[in-house]
Image (cartoon, rainbow, N blue to C red; front, side, top):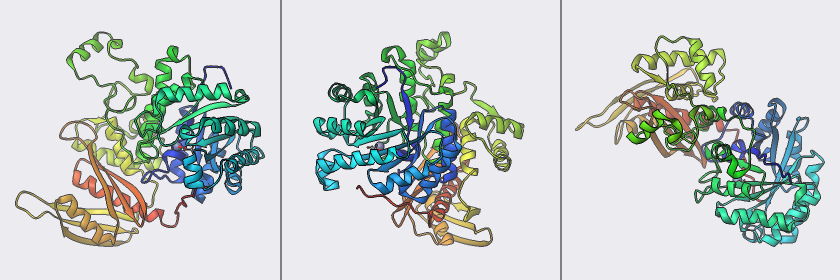
Length: 515
Ligand code: KIV
Ligand code: ZN
């Protein structure tokens, strides 16, 4: 293991976070995020799980070929077919890595795999040896490591290093660990595994108890030198350790940890917003480092202090994480160039056609609002620039509601660019009425699982942004819509979700079983 204080930042947004229901991405969207992760200068991008679907295979293959800078990693279970698919997807890549994993806790071995410890050990060793035939850089994860018998864990780690693993990742798969215990586990491995110096120890924490970042930092303090994390902390269940929090903790408390990393921190905010838009997952206002309130001082004493000397109440500067202090950016008189420039600063590189589309919408919004904030621009881009065909397009929406009135809606949809269908319905409120009318017009039978609305900025002129999670035949997808009219935003979000469902038909992902 390296004794240097340099931490390898391994981003798994495109793999661990992307497998969350409702957050799936198209290949093009994954490419966009991967390019942004390269600008962020992460060391490793886990681009997907090639054996899980043809789409994932293609995404890993293209990212490995086209995204320069970071090592590109493909995930594989400890089965020959998975390793083969990962090897094929990474073929010819400048910096390929295969990451193979198997559950090593008795709960996993007996409860799910129905195998013995010996069998699992052999499979792990075999998989690492097979992966070595495709690339030198091989990572092995004993899944559920924090609930694995520590002596058996040492045995598996030693054997997989002996087989050629260059990184050993310690996953807290179910978010069970607490920081002190995590530090101790890393110390134990370093003391007990004779060949541990031949591999980098990595940490991969989930946030079920809200401890993912604290556990990751404890592991780094005790000698781990790779942190696996995701943008905005997205991921399975409560999510993974948030990349931006780990990176800024290392940077802000560098002396305490004796660590550093190569991440370009000014790209953190643009990356956060890009991922939020494409994965249709709103960043909470109070989210550390990248939340809208992360640098907003509201109490009088704090405002006074910051105005006199920023360090009184700020431990990081907004500019360091890519938040511009000048929040009001454009007006109705701003041109396309200014819009394109500002969007690029926010992490959105758009084609000419996309800029034209965004500009048209920008002018509409600018006519209604006196001040256009970055958050408004991001909502406009999220609304206009979509990577799914528009099977259903909202052409007309009229709703009636009020005290003592039965809420009703009339909706006109254009289907497949040609058929025009108009329907009316009543409901519990104007949004419900609009959704019922959309169901009638589109023939949708999906179930709405979640509906959320938020004001993008403050004030009564604020844009409203709606996210709707729908489920049809076990497939969950999320749609997003924004408008200064919240009923319109709701209708757009629902139609976006229906378009995503339509696009997902035929590109269904298999959910691999445990080995
Ligand atoms: O959480 C986990 O254990 C994983 C492994 C595949 C590393 O994501
Ligand atoms: Zn995980």
